[in-house]
Amino acid sequence: MPSLKPLALAISASIGLAAQAGTFAYVSNAEDGTISSYRIDGASGALQPLATTPAGKLVMPLALSPNGRHLYASVRSQPYSVVSYRIDARTGALDRLATASLPESMAYISTDRSGKYLFGASFGGDVVSVNPIGPHGVAQGETLELVKTGRHAHSIMVDPTNRFVYVGNLGVHRVLQFAFDDHSGALAPIGAGFAPAEQGAGPRHSAPAPNGNFLYVLNELFGTVTTYAIDRKTGALSAKASVDGVPAARYKLEKGLIRPPLGQGEKVDDTPRIWAADIKVSPDGRFVFTTERTSSTVTSYRADPASGALSYLATIEVEKQPRGIAIDPRGRWLVVAGEKSPEVGLYAIDPQSGALKRTGGAPAGKGANWVEIVDTE
View 1 (cartoon, helix red, strand yellow):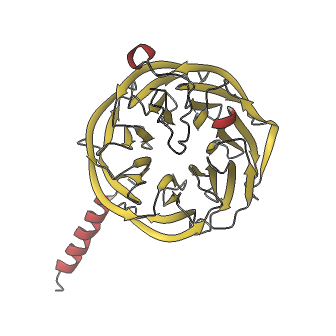
View 2: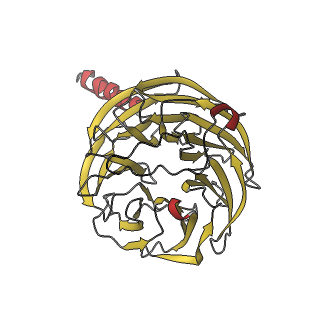
View 3: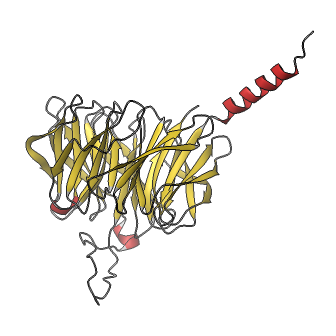
C-alpha cells in the first residue's frame, strides 16, 4: 500500500497557505522609498508587519485594482513613474511587475471601475492624466489624456457607475467634473467643467457615496467636508452643505491659510493652521472619516445615505501628522499612517456608532503617507 505521508503533507501545506489569506494593508514610505505591508488580524485587533518592498524615492500615492490583485505606486522623484505590483492573495506579498513613465509628479492616482485605466492628478503640474492598464494588470507609459487644470490638482476619482470623474482643484477652489468614456479613456467637461467650492476652502480629496448619489469633498484649508449631489444622468455636481471637522475651541487653528513655499532666507510661517489631508467613506455609506495633520486627528461623521447629510460625531488624536487613511472592504478597520509617526495605527470601527478604538500598531517607515487595504479571504 503506497504511503499516505506525501499526500498528508501536501494537504497540510495547502491548508496552511489557504489560512494565510486575509486582510492586508499597504503603506508607502516617501523618505525610505518603500512600501510596508501588514496583515490585519481580525480576531486580536493586531497589525502584523509582513515585509518592506522597494518602490522608488518619494513613493507616495497608491491605488488598488478593482479586483484587488494589483497595487500601483506613484513615484514622485524624476523620472516620474508608476510601479505595478501583483498581490499574492495567500501571503499579501508584492511582486514587482513593471515600471512605466508618468507625464508629471502625481499627488494622487486611482483606477477606473473596470481596471483598464489609471488616473493621475498632479499638484505641481496642474494637470490630470489617463493611462491604460494592460490585460495583465500592468500600467502602461502611454498617456491617453492630459488635461490642463487650474492650480494644484490634488485628487482624481471616478464615481461608482464609472461614467463620471471628479477632481479636487485646490488652488482655484473648484471641483472639476468630467464625463468618462470607458471605451477610449477620454474625459469631457460636464457643463462649465466644474462646481465651485467655498472661496478659500481648498478642495483636496474626495470620496463618493457607495450609492453614487453624492460626492464628499474634504477642504484642506477649512477642515470641512462638503456634500455634493451628483446628477445621475449628467454627472453634474451641486453643493448641498458643509460640516466642520476641526473643533475650533480645542485646537485654535487658523482657516484658509495655504502653506507658502519657502524662498531663499525666508522665515518659516509657523502659524498653526488647518491642514486636512484624507477622506474615506465606509463601505455601507453610513460613516465618513477625515484626517487633519496639524492637530494629528481623525474626525468621524455619520452620513445619511438617502440625503447625503453629514453630522459630526467625534475627533480623536491619532498618529502624528496623519496623511493617509483606509477602511477595509468589510468596514471593520481603519488604518492610519502618520508622516511623523514611528507607528502605523489600527482602529476598530464600531458598526453601530462609528466610534474608533485603537487596537494595535506596527512600526512605520519614514514619511509614511498613503494606505490601501485588500481583503483576500
